[in-house]
Amino acid sequence: MKALVYHGNKDLRVEEVLEPETQQGQVKLAVDFCGICATDIEEYLYGPVFISGDAPNPVTGKMMPLVTGHEITGTVIEIAPGVSNISIGDRVALNGVLTCEKCYWCKSGETTQCPDMAAVGFAIDGGLAERIVWRADRLVRLPDEVNSKDAALIEPTSVAIHAVRRSGASDDDTVAIIGVGTVGMLAMQAAKGRGAKALAVDPRQISLDLAAELGADATINPLTENLSERISELTDGVGPDIVIDAAGSSETAALSVDLVRSGGHVVLVAIYTSTPTFDFNSLVASEVRVSGSLAYQQKDVEEAVRLIAEGKIKTRQLISDVISLDQVIDTGFKRMLAPTKDVFRILVSPNLG
Ligand SMILES: [Zn+2]
Ligand SMILES: [Zn+2]
Image (tube, rainbow, N blue to C red):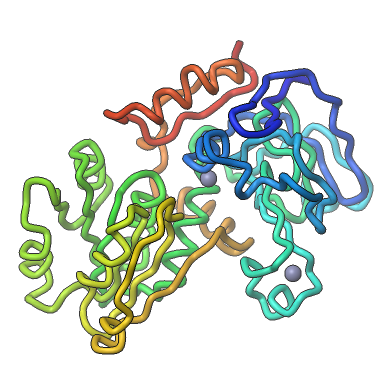
């Protein structure tokens, strides 16, 4: 079958690979859609960082070359023995995170902290391919209300839901989201879904316009407005209870701590490509809590499917284009790296071209 294979830094190839084969407890999917994420581009340009490059991952036993792609929906076409929760023809989204299930963190339910965590497309073959094999108990069936294209954003939605869950946002809270790209936009909707008031901050007007359309209570452009004055006005001079940094620039972590109210909570859901400097005395004085948020858990994927089915999270507006496997680098990466980036998610359909 045809797949996009990561061979190393700036070496991605569309090539013929062996047909994947199911084992006990697994199913084979025909991939319907797979999103291209900023992480895929970072791995192409600067990686392997998260991709298993030096040694096989202990959970999967796999290392590069690997089929890339981690935001996947597919249709079940084959079932191995030992599968009872899924049937042929089911449309599904992947929980793309596998863990050892033996360590302290796995046993205590903090699976995102498993030291051997393996993500699809990073430590095992991913979804930028015609077909993929996956564990049946790590799939979530899509209800009729959720079409497969919208569902390709279930993975970033799960990341956003995990961050909002970690923030503890509830209906008395005001949550400011720094950076309403894909994950930020989904976190904004997840916070609204919990009854919180959401403020969207972004220098890109196209993102702010969409945030307003998708329910943000206020939008702020720091290039044209005084950010701290506007935040102060919108929160009666107190500051937001929660700030979520989904931007990940060198300034936005410290900015988040600056903006949140004293005693509030900052959640960092971005990966910082440069190392921010920080004065920890500001946390001592303000009693602000700062938490990281990595990946997601099975319950986040299930909640993502439910919130999309209920219309509380909308993903359709975040799909900017659908392209073929052959177009990933020349069209997909190029548009996502353009200085005037006008896209949120580009989906790949292996059925095209
Ligand atoms: Zn991603
Ligand atoms: Zn573990």
